[in-house]
Structures are given as C-alpha cells and as structure tokens.
Image 1 (cartoon, rainbow, N blue to C red):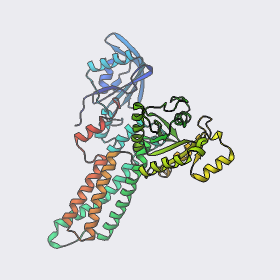
Image 2 (tube, helix red, strand yellow):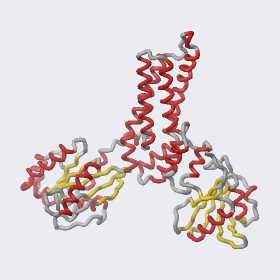
Image 3 (cartoon, one colour):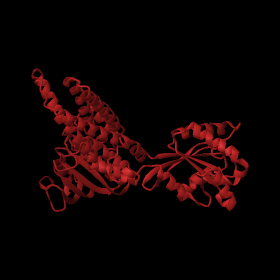
Length: 462
C-alpha cells in the first residue's frame, strides 16, 4: 500500500483568506517544487537544508502566479516521513487553484482524504491510534475533547496498550516454547506470574472500557432534552442557556411544534440542548407529531430536564407529580433535573411549600436568567470528569472500544484456562487472539479495508 508518488492538497480550509497553505509530499516533492519556485536569492530548492523557509515566487513558465514562502522538510524528518514542501501563498481561491493545477501538470496527483496522515502511519511516524487522534483533534470543539485528543496523539493510550501487549507477548513466547518441548513435560512460563499478569491486564482493560462511557459523551456532546407542558418556558430556557434568541417565544401555548437543537460548552464539556414540543393532549395533527418526537428525543437524550410553571404549582401540583412519575417510570436510568420556572413570581412561603413537596427541585426564572448558572453546574455534575482532571487515558473511539472488549474476553478465557489447567496449546490460541486485538488498536495488525475506512473520515490535506 506504500506509494512514493507525490501528492498535493490544500492544507488550510477552502475559500478566500489571508493565507493558504498547499502541501506536497512524496519522493519527488522537493524536485517538483523546484521546477515552479524562483527564490529571490536564486537558491536551488533541492540543495536547501531540511526545516528551512524560502521566500520567492511561484512561476508558470514566464507567468508569475504569486509571491510565496516555501517550507522544506526532508524525509524522514517530516510529518509524513517523506520529502515534503508547504507553499504559503495568498489566500485568493484563484491563486490556490492556479498553483495546485500547475503542480498537477508538473507530476503531482491530488491527495486522497487523510492520505498525508496515512503515509505518516505507513512510514512509522505515528501508530494507528495516534493517527486517529489527529482527526479527533481537528474536530474537537471544546476543551475536554481537545485534551483527550492531545493525550492520545502524544501516545498515552498507545503506550498503555503497547506495554500490555509486550508483557503478554513475552509469556506467549514461553507458552509456545513449552509446546516445542511437549514430550518433556516442562514449564517455561511461571504460572503464578502469568496469573498476576492476566489480573493486571484485566484490570487495565476494564478501566479503559469503563472510560468509554465518559469519553464518548465528551467527544460527541451530551444530549439534554428540555421537556414539559406547553408554555412553561422551555424555549425561554433554551434561549437563556445559549444567551441568544434561538427559539421562538410566545404566549400562545404549543408554539414549538418541532424539536430545536443547539450546543453549549459548560466547563469544557459540550452539551447539546434539545427544546421539544410541549407534552399535552391535543387534537392538532402537527402538534401531535411534535409531541411524538418529544418522546423520541427523551429516548435519545442522556439527561432530561423537566420544566414546569412554578407559579401554577398550587393549581397543577398533583398533575405535575403524575407527569414526573410517568417520565421516571418510562426512563428510569436517565438523570432527571426537575426545574420550577417563573420563580420570580413566587412568595417566600410558596417557595418553601414547593421545596417541601419536591426536595430535589431547582427554582429558576428563565426570563430573568436567575438560577441558570445553577442549572449549568448541576448538568456538569452528571459528567465524571475525575479521569479527565487526573490526565488518565480515556477511550473515545468506538473501534478501540470494540477491540478492548474482544481483548478482555480473550484474556478472561486465558485466565479461566490457567485456573482449570487447560492445555497450553488451547491457551496459546486465546493469547494470540488477545494479541491480535491489541495490535488492531495500534496498527501492528491491519489491512487495506480497515485503513480505508479510518482515513476516509479525514479531511483532504491532512
């Protein structure tokens, strides 16, 4: 799969800007760059040292396309491990297209999605989990997902897996050696030490698997459904959380007929808020569809915010409790935040009475933006950020999670075999499968289809 042809792509976002960067990588990258670059000091680009910058012009025959700055990176000391140049030109889309078309005529081809990072992996500059972290880093839109991607790109996850794999591989070699001397009935692998190693591997795998619950929500955002009867202030609350007029607010009940979604970062964690249609009995066909969608969104959400009009509690308190019980029974595993809105209309006695009836209630005024920060703090408390604060390895990738589950299953089989005196040849098969799953994570075991699926999700130019 390793290719030595020279590839080119725009490494900065497409469209007009102050500066654009065009990246070329391949065996002939610098030579191709030399054919189109005229240094202001008449330097030969092919003779320049690695990691140097050069000012000059990109020239198509006798036509000057732009004044540029060219960065030279000679393999293997480059991102891809190959000869690489980066042309920093002015950000006109016309200039970008003209330079790329010129380079294509000079022998480059357009890079596929993620092909620069794929070459970095194939040339041993990154392992597979680090390469995947590059894509996560690019797409990170909050502090937590950025921190996890950086930790993984630096090799934190890879190092843990590599260490476990190396220790298991040492014992696997001893088990295989025993099979060669099966007739002599000798043991090269210390069974007590092996058992301790399996316990340690099992413990680490379980910790990494458990971390996926946190990692997945940090990477993709935590969906929060805002539900309640019509006209209790759900849209006003969404607007207060986002600090903008995102949802239509009206005195007319049932204004929100469909779900409205938007994202907010709280304490470095992304939350995706979903304003839903008010839950009530209605003959309106369109509103009924909206209410049906509300329950679908509750199913998809990880946290449910139930909002009611606290100023109407004296009248509708019993009905409210019935609705709350219905949601609790239907979704028993979902965290439920009970919020009494329009608390600015309450007297002190009314506040005390409501808290006596519903101790866990949070009283706010979405319109006046009172208590909104308390709601944000409560939402943040549902995310276990302890591992993040302690800079522990957190798994965010579904492919890694799947391989970890399979590796744990094989380790538990080996452990059972050891405890029941299973023959070494059968244990060796399970050990090999566990090693295979470890290798799938870091890329020591791979295939073209797997690489194609992973790098297809990258942007072109990275």
